[in-house]
Length: 453
Image (cartoon, rainbow, N blue to C red; front, side, top):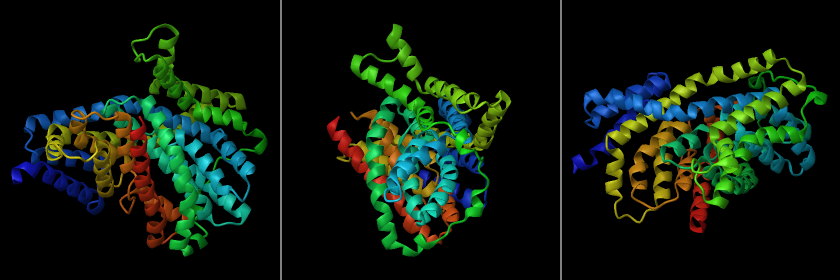
């Protein structure tokens, strides 16, 4: 009996080792992931001469595709930020909606901005706008901040080009365009439902949290751009959504014609080419260089400085994502997924629920959304190969699980706590509860979509 479940026990031991290395010994997450991958491989009985090969394969397979998208996405976000595009989008929507509907303004603005900005970048970019807006309208910071946090959490967990959905799509061989389409179908109502109702629930659960003034000193300096120099709302919106538009265009054409990418020629083949995630992101970056830089009379040196500043901070994050990929590969090659598949053979549990559960457990244990998402693929992949399930929805189910229960081992938890000046209890009742509700309601919407496709 022990032999049958030993792979699962080995995973638990591996996760505990990872937590100990990060939380007790304060070891860098990337180094901790590599050590954990090696130790877990040994515990799983893998031949010693194959463990390093497996780790190299996991790193290469994970970063081979997403490193390009990750880098281009970071550049696009920085160009949008420094060029004033994000500010223009937020300010315009706030001006349209007014004080009474400020919640909806922040949901929409944050969702649009969050599509092309990674969570931490979007958070840092939008928090100053949250504080400014709250002060201008004389309302609580959290009344504006929670809708903002809702939207960027949804885009981070569900939508390419964010690293989690992109990496999962690659691992389960899902079409990124389809994932983006289904992600929008699920993500928009999710952000509206939760973002529109949760602030009222949070106010009842933790009224003192809404009285906090927030840590405005932590915001730091933002690149100030005069109102007259801001790009127009329409141009900013087009720049932010450019990669989404291109990927969706290719997906719609494919759904209409029924041809697979790589099997079409002429104009249709060209549409598929510009609709691939890498090409779409590259085109969007080139477009942003013009709209957010050249068009605003910036020198090419200034624009390239922005590009450089966008890449430098994500170097370690790329390594950490690759480290998550090594752990995933060890789980796959070590037979953990096969064990899970054997346990659930003949079960009535939906593969979508299993995918969500695996990601939610790993997210709770590991803290990182992206690492949890990538690592859970190793557990569910063998089951997906034996069942008829929409892989795009599997990506979303894993994405939903990967945002579950953000707590003290997640950087987002501490960012939210410190920026809004909350106590630990208040942070659990706002940020942690928000992410958990988004995860569960998101799974429910995914299951509904699954019944319809």
